Length: 226
Image 1 (spheres, rainbow, N blue to C red):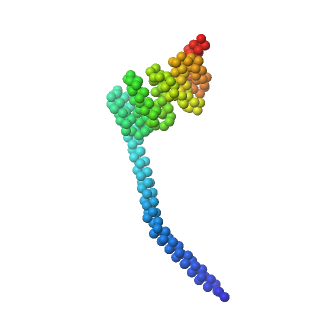
Image 2: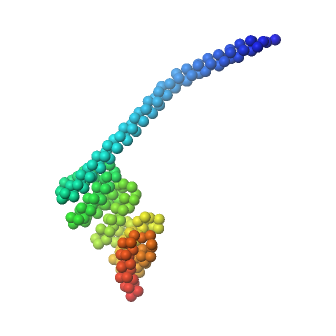
Image 3: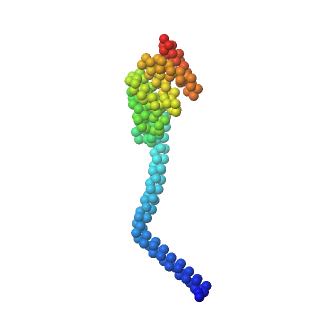
C-alpha cells in the first residue's frame, strides 16, 4: 500500500523526467535549426534597420526637393527665368516623385508661356505616361489634349480623353468639353451640341466649364438644327 510520500516522490520523479526530456528536445531542435533561427533574427533586424534608413533618406530627399522647388519659384518671382528653368529641370530629373510632377507641370506652363507648345505637351505627356498618382496623370492627359486640339489628329485626341468622360470620373466635365470641341472640329455639330448640353445642364460641373458649354451650345446648336 502506497503512502502520500510515495505518491509525492513519484510525481516529482515524473516532473524531473519530463523536464529532462524537454531540455533534450530543445537541445536537439537548437542543434538542428539554431543557425536558421539566428539567420531569421539577423534578417529581421537588418530589415527593420533598412526600412528605418529608407524612411530617413526619403524624408531628407523630400525636404531637399521642396527646398529646390521653392528656390525655383522664388527665382521666377524675381524675374530670373533661366535660373528657375534650370532649378525646375533639376527637380524634375532628380527630385522625389511628387515634386517631379509639380516641376513638370510648372515647366509646361513656362514653356507654353514662352510659345513652346510642343515642349509643354511633351512634359504633360511625360506625367500622363506614369509620373505621380492617377489624378495627376489624368490631369496631365487633359491639359495635353487641350493643347493638341488645333494641331493633332482629332481622333487621337478624343481617344486619349474618352475614358475620363465616364460618369464616375472627377474629370468628366473637362473630358466632355474636349470631346465636344473635337466633334465640332470634325463637323459633327449634333454630337457637339449633345455633349455641351450635358455639361451645361449638370449642376456638378464647375461654373466656368458650364458657362463655356452654354455659349458653345448656343453656337453649335443653331448649326445642328440648320
